[in-house]
Length: 432
Ligand SMILES: NC(=O)c1ccc[n+]([C@@H]2O[C@H](COP(=O)([O-])OP(=O)(O)OC[C@H]3O[C@@H](n4cnc5c(N)ncnc54)[C@H](O)[C@@H]3O)[C@@H](O)[C@H]2O)c1
Ligand SMILES: O=c1ccn([C@@H]2O[C@H](COP(=O)(O)OP(=O)(O)O[C@H]3O[C@H](CO)[C@@H](O)[C@H](O)[C@H]3O)[C@@H](O)[C@H]2O)c(=O)[nH]1
Figure 1: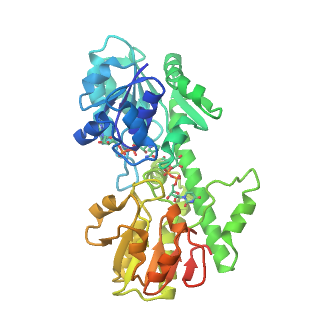
Figure 2: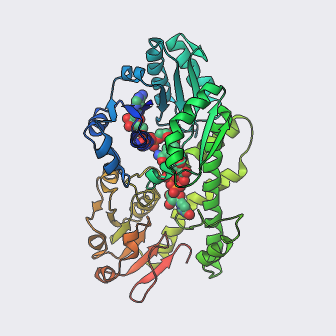
Figure 3: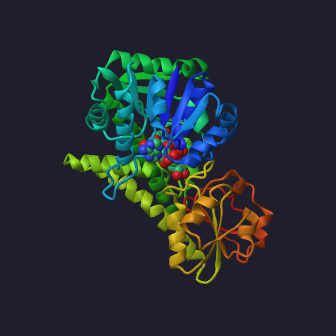
C-alpha cells in the first residue's frame, strides 16, 4: 500500500520507517526542511535505538519525505502524527493538527479516489470527529464517508523501545465508524501482525473510545508509578527496601512487574501532558479527578524529596554538584518534562555549581540551560564534585565504581536506584 505520514517526530519517523520496512511505500510530510532532508538522506531526525539502520535502509527510497502536502495525494491512507502539546490550563493545543487537517483537506479536494485520514496523535475524545473531520470537510468540500473517511489509531510505543514496541505491540486499537476504514487499517497493519513475535490483539472500537483508551492507558501507568512512589516513600520512612516489596507484589498477576520502579517519578512527552489533558477534560465536564490530581502531586514531590536528601548530607552552595542523566529516561535524547529540570532548578536555588552529564541528551539540555557546565563523560562529571545526583537510570551509571574516588566529597544521592551502595561513598536514595 501507499501510506503517508504527516509529522516526522518521535512517532511519525518511527511508524514511517516501520511501514517502509513492512513493504509499504511511504511518503512523509513535515514542515521542517532539516527533518525532511535528514529522512531523504537516510538519517534519523531523532535519537531512537535501531532507527539509524532502518532509516539508512529506506530513507530516500521506500520512504521519501517532503514539505509538500500535494505528495500525499498518491497515498491511500494518511496518518496524522503531529504534536498535541499542553496549553497552560492542561488542555491540548490542536494548532498543528488543525493546520495539517486543512492542508490535507486541500489535497483531498483534488483527489478522485477515496482517502482514509487516521489520527495517530493523542487527542481528547470528540476531537477527531468534531474538530479534525469538519476542517477536512470544509477544505475539501467533501463529507466524511463520501470522498474521504476518518479513523483514530492511538499509539502505545515507548521512546527508547519505539521500534520493538511498534513491531510487536500488545494491541492495535482501530477506532472507526465505518467498515471500509476498518478494513483499510487492517490492511495497513496486516504485514505487521504477520511479522509480530507475539499475537497482538486488534481492538476494533469507536473513534471516541479509541481516543479515550490512549488517555486511560497513560493515566493508569502514570498512576501506577505514583502509587509505587508513594509506597516507596513510606517504605523509606520505615527502613523497608521498596524494591523487595515491589518484586513481591509483582508476583501477584493482578499487579504484574511493570512500572513498579520507584524513584524520581515520571517525565517525558506523554505522561505529563496526557494526564494534564484528561484532568482538564474531566473538569471541563464538571468532574473532579481527585485521584489523577494526587498522581501528579506525588510526582511533583519526588524531585523535592531528592533535594531534601541532598540537604541532609551537605550544603552545596558554591560547590560543584554532578547531575547524572538529563533525558527523561534512558534510551532517548528527549528532555521534555524530564525530572532533571526541577533538580537543576533546585540546585540553582542552592547556588550550586552544576556539572551535568548525559550520554545523548546534552545538546538538547544545553539549549535550555546554556550556562551550566556539561561533561563529556560520567567520570569527568564526578571528578571534583562534592555531590552527585542520579536522575536518569542509564545502564552505564550502574557500572561506575573507581570514578567515585575522584569526587571531592563522595555524596551520592540516587533518584533511580541505579548505584549500588558501597564502601567509599556516602549513599542515600529516594527509596533505599
Ligand atoms: N513521543 C512518543 O513516544 C509518543 C507515543 C505515543 C503517542 N504520541 C503522540 O503522538 C503525537 C506526536 O508526538 P511526537 O512525540 O512524535 O511529536 P514531535 O514533536 O516529536 O514531532 C512532531 C513533528 O511534526 C512536525 N510538524 C508540526 N506541525 C506540522 C504541520 N502542520 N505539518 C507537518 N508537520 C508538522 C514537526 O516539525 C515535528 O517534526 C502526539 O500527540 C503525542 O502525544 C507520542
Ligand atoms: O517503573 C517505572 C516506569 C517508568 N517510570 C518513568 O515513567 C516515565 C515514562 O516512561 P515510559 O512509559 O517508559 O516512557 P514513554 O516513552 O513516555 O512511554 C509512555 O508514553 C507513551 C506516549 O504516550 C506511550 O505510548 C507509552 O505506552 C507509555 O509507556 C519515565 O520518566 C520513566 O522514568 C518510572 O519512574 N518507573
